[in-house]
Image (cartoon, rainbow, N blue to C red; front, side, top):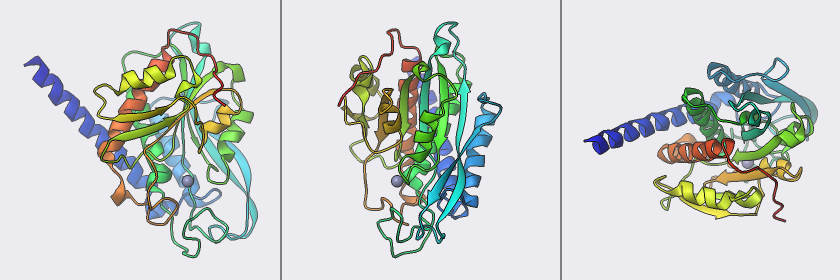
Length: 313
Ligand SMILES: [Zn+2]
């Protein structure tokens, strides 16, 4: 009987998580967001949406603000814009750890929210000639959906982690990891207090083999082993690389000698096209991925051994 109840409750929890993942992804990848291009109303509305949930789930602010603003230069021929310097923002908050000593150490979890707007000739779109909203349901509304699902779980957990956790959603990723570079160069805490960064970029298209891919699992002690152990009963088949740190915002941390792991569920034909839409999102998969990365985050935030950087170049 007990095991039956347990199964039912896990299933109920998963279906709740699926719904939440879908809700966030759908909102961020709706036409209203206009492809979330930095400096536009849609980008700002996406940031405000993320900030609303940071507030709701009780994250603390650094310097009295969830926004970390920065400027970026936009070339002519992207998103119908003339070349211009625009202001955009990372969204940042944190939850303090429970251990008197370890709370001075921080684990960062992040996902970029910006995308290519209407595309255009100078953009990173694969369909440069088509001016259409690039909704980016996988890239990277899915990563932000996972971030908010994980935040909700952390906030509702009765047990607090020993180390502090920073939640961050970056802008300017598509233009060359600009938001995460800015964040690493303008950290609200001492750099050596940042122990591990976990990044999610394109986690919404879990395939039939249930593969989640990760690079950089070996950049902190026993990381590969941890990720393997967490695979048990996760419903996922993780493809784990000790090194291979590439492709997204975690690179900005790794280049600064901070342990960094990047998660994704693989590429697809709709990558960087106007067809990367909500209809193709596997939200059952998004829930599994959120649960897996939540477990990784909590394990690392309570890690028994010292979190030192391991270079995998
Ligand atoms: Zn992208």
